Image (cartoon, rainbow, N blue to C red):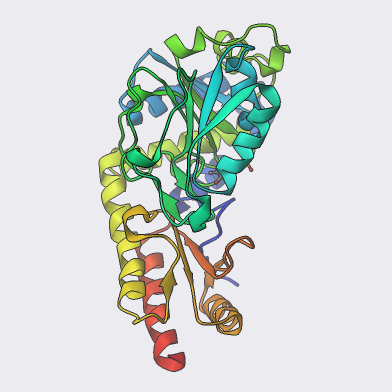
Length: 362
Ligand SMILES: *Cc1c(COP(=O)(O)O)cnc(C)c1O
């Protein structure tokens, strides 16, 4: 393969080409230092510039100020599954969880080990085909937070509008749709996202914490597991994943240069639209997994009449440079992950391939 392919893998996922090119260009000699960014001290001025600028860019793109802290941690979103309840659950309180897929189930499982939890809503009975409506959600009496998964990477559903629980802060796993659209960040007490879908490479997890929520955090925990440690030390308590943060920095600059979140959302809608349109006009040849009102703009999931046909689809698509379309093993079928960095042309190419495949096999 001499050309780059269209990479539809769910994560680690495709990165913007200009980001990879810039990283390549600067790789051996970062800004005239004579060293790679990989070789620079995390205490150096050069690296501090990178990490603090990344934090500022994140705030700028989300339209938030000092009421939030932006952290760069390790351990993936999966570490946040237990770090959140560890920091915020006490003997007395309860945390509410809304289940919309496998990742929310995993988050709940970890929280159950830390304290009292309440499942405030779930669409598991319907194979997580949709996001529950407000009348399907019942909160416990006074939850310390309500946990949601904004985009369900495996099932291909996404909260179209975030719920409002008044004074109860929302904690959200936004691993697979962070910075894919503008939203009102003020309702959230904490947001976390493994970077490898929409923000950069694997190995760094972005965490946003609202200051008033942080005040409620438990302080008698191991140093590395306390949010307050990382807030006080600005994510530099120990050696952070410096190269990963540098790539996130370039990705955020790329988003900004593309017009920010409003522009990105418009492009994401256009991209997903090409694929959903083919599914909807296929007369049942392609069957979308998600209910229409809950469709994800990031992960398009669908099945076909049988597994053999799906296998042929994946093989023939790969031969055309459309890679990574096999669905997650828990849902089966096919999945096209089309995060921010997937170009419009990639989605158009997939839509054309789907139409052609149906003509030949329908
Ligand atoms: C991929 C993913 C995770 C797991 O992230 P890790 O960084 O691998 O721990 C969690 N939640 C969602 C929504 C995901 O898409």
